[in-house]
Picture 1 (spheres, rainbow, N blue to C red):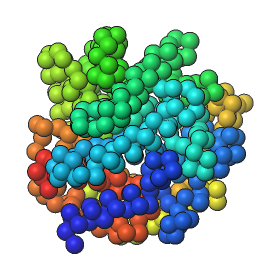
Picture 2: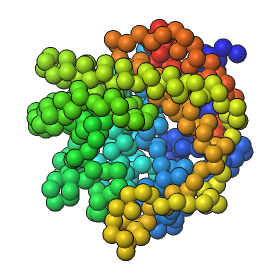
Picture 3: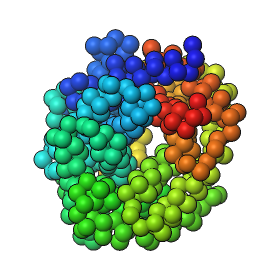
Length: 410
């Protein structure tokens, strides 16, 4: 079976197993090969109300629905552009509905929840993150940018979503909040700071405002975008090459830069964005090659489903250790993380990483990837049996594959 056939199997898997028609969301993993029982592990509304095991829903299977939405939306526009896939527009509308659910179901318009429980269609954890906002914004922008023939009502929905997210950010991120995206309970959240952040995070806020300008053409959002982008891009042009980077950091930094480059009107600033995109891609290549070698050496099972998180050992999130020694919780709730079995975690992490690294490279028009690297990626991407997968790693692999295909590399 060639790589194209394998990727078709992966595509079927994410829609048949990870996607839920009730919520229009892609969940993180399944715990049963039985279709009807695949989501039995997902938290119950009472567990979510108690913020168990943590206010982010980390490890529960409803942690990263917005990250998945961002990648799937990009895959859909590529399928639409490259193959004329007639179903892509319909599916893109479903992805947008899931994003809207996460952005409005809780009554705080513009706050992007990580996911929503399919058990009641409304329960969500109170802590989101920069990352979830980033991929939701990217997906809504992609919908507007790449599906001009979408139903006008759906385009209006995507535009409203982007403006509402920007308005939420403007109202929430201030000195009083500690420049934090905040949680639904009004307290500061982990992984939600928007000031004094690392270089790979600094362009997220201008990205949100730039997307709102694109959707509305309201100059207010463009001014806010430039207010944060002008100092931020200088940091992105001076990234630390010796820092130990992570695939998720590179991938989300690249998405924010790509969006900003596309919506920017000033050619001088666009050129800076292009330079930063090129720098990120150049820095990524050595990590990509290293991850491919790890994946080639992996001798375990690629297709293992995850265990039920309630039965796992838990560890305490490290940030809690920065609070006073007398405190065992952060902001009123503990952040305990289920520890995934390595037999599941390792193949999932490998698939996610090679997919993320590939799409970072492919998003840079100035980079040409060595054919040996592309062949190695294709070989590894073809290893899993996607008819019996267990994680959302295939979404990242598909994202990388379709962007590489769009570049003519595959």
